[in-house]
Amino acid sequence: MRVPSRRLVSSIALSAAAFGCALASPAAAQTAEGDQTEEAERGVGVIVVTAQKREQDQRDVPLSISTLSNDALAAVQAGGGDIRGLAGRVPNLNIESSFGRSFPRFYIRGLGNTDFDLNASQPVSLVYDDVVLENPILKGFPIFDLDRIEVLRGPQGTLFGRNTPAGIVKFDTVKPGTDGGYAKASWARFNTIQLEGAVGANLGNGFSFRASGFYQHRDHWVDNIDNGAGDDLGGYDDFAGRLQLQYEDGPLTARLTGQIRVLDGSAILFRANVFQRGSNELIGSRPSMWCRIGCGQRAAFS
Image (cartoon, rainbow, N blue to C red; front, side, top):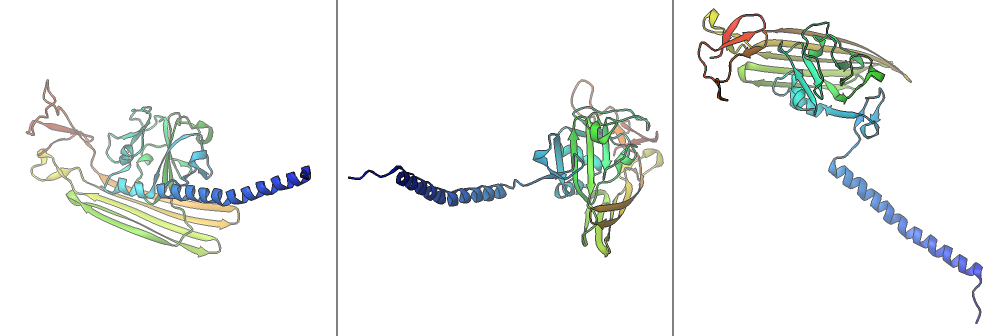
């Protein structure tokens, strides 16, 4: 009886290993495809952010970031709200105002500044297409035709400079370069009207543009009894527009943006002494229940 040589045994072993790998490869490929299909069904995809001033997958950025897509923004604006509506959509973000739709104050993780002075530095900065809007009046600009909103929690002074120890709220608009647009309209109580639309097109030779607009209206709904019968306060007309012109030539991209806002409305109302003394019950409406408003007048709820 002849004993197989070592060379023959090694050849048989290598053949068996190669055959095993050939059988395992399709199984591994099927497993990878199954994982991708399962991931797609769960809706887990790549979330692109620009928190480090370049497009990255959010999972690769070592920062605490919350994002809002265009669909989520549509839900925020559906009720005729303003920028303060973001406070209920992003964790650790609060936005308040003592002047209605203008002059909002931002807080991230409880850190903010309640100073009413226009020159007061705020620890939360607002960045609109990489342009810092430091003036508190500019921070109330309506949110419309946006690609995404990113809220970065924690100090951001390395990339975004001063007045960012609490974080930043970063707005990225829909850029020119694609044809088409959209239009939306809604109507609600107190004759609340909201119109929003945008249009864009390629002009050729590397040029493109995008124009977008936003309008909100609400009738007065609070009666100032000093003026007799009739609603005198609470209404507003808010219009904002944006025009972008972009030029692309290989690695070069230049964009010129202009924005305008026209706001005509009364100050926000504050109802004083709303609770009964010694209880959590609300005091009923009566002429002695006054409201203080920003312009110093007095009004009463009906």
